[in-house]
Amino acid sequence: MKPPIVYLDTSFFIGLIDDVADRRQDAKDVVRYETTKQSKLYTSILTINEFTVKTYDKFRKHPDCDQKIEEAVKSIRDIALIYAINDEVVKESARLMSVWGEFRKLGSPPLPRDRKFRWDSLHIATAQVLRADRVYSFDAPWNEFPKHEIPNIKQIISPASTPQPNLKASE
Image 1 (cartoon, rainbow, N blue to C red):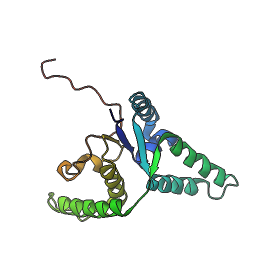
Image 2 (cartoon, rainbow, N blue to C red):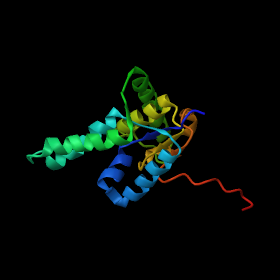
Image 3 (cartoon, rainbow, N blue to C red):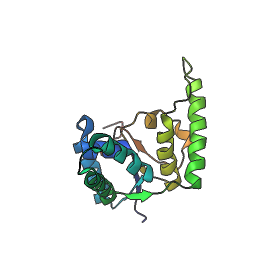
Image 4 (cartoon, one colour):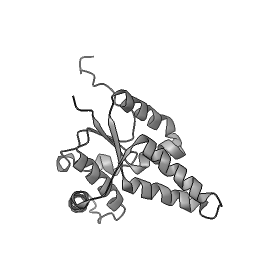
């Protein structure tokens, strides 16, 4: 049997490494769970970019900034394989941005296209291209995105936590 493919977005690593919003334990539990399932963990090169921007913002003027950047990148690479942004991901991201823009216009009140969604669209597109069995995030757009538009993603878990077995209605 093929190992499950799991995608972790930037917010997952921010919770895990920086413990933002006390999310470290939930993220650690996810990594532990997926390791026991022998899952292949992936993230995007975008995660490296987004995470290191935060590190530069905080430590840019410190003499050990480069060391902190290397530590951050190593922490991410120790957990997940890095998937590059390629033509397939870029095209899928553009399609997803278009879908998201249309979806937001249908709301009440109608909303303009969200420019911040560009980053999320690249993450969602990467998970879609990878045909992820599970995606973990702490970002709200993952739950709001129309699921029929991302059929290659089997399960989105946001906020990230270990999957719970489905209980029968009779239990």
